[in-house]
Image 1 (tube, rainbow, N blue to C red):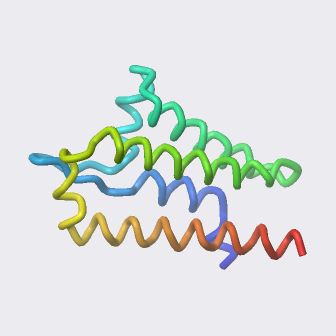
Image 2 (image 1 turned 90 degrees about the horizontal axis):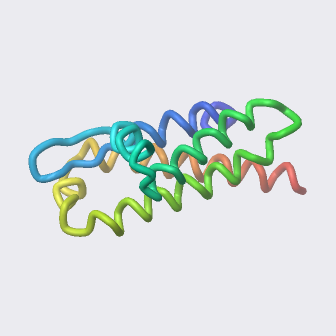
Image 3 (image 1 turned 30 degrees about the horizontal axis):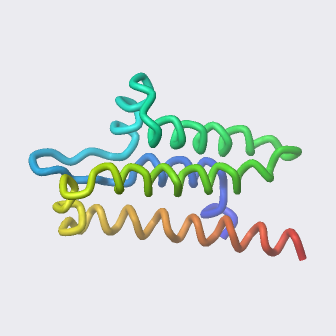
Length: 119
């Protein structure tokens, strides 16, 4: 559980989310890399999420990991909403489902860890 809730694992699983278009498929990190210089909302939000997770490696700023998680989820939702119709092959691809499952397990682990800390 400790490995799954680590900020680096969270960032890596987020970047490895696999999205398939009509012709090609890429990990989400590639989409973010192209979106940030264009100031696209999902790219900026995703970069903020990754930055918060990396800053959360410092023990005194661990709370930023939850902020990063929220930013990552908003980034994915924003990307999917903006890409309606273009990413239908994503949900027919086993690799995409596996990466989404990994990210969901990591998100669950992060939330459980923070709930346990608060008790």
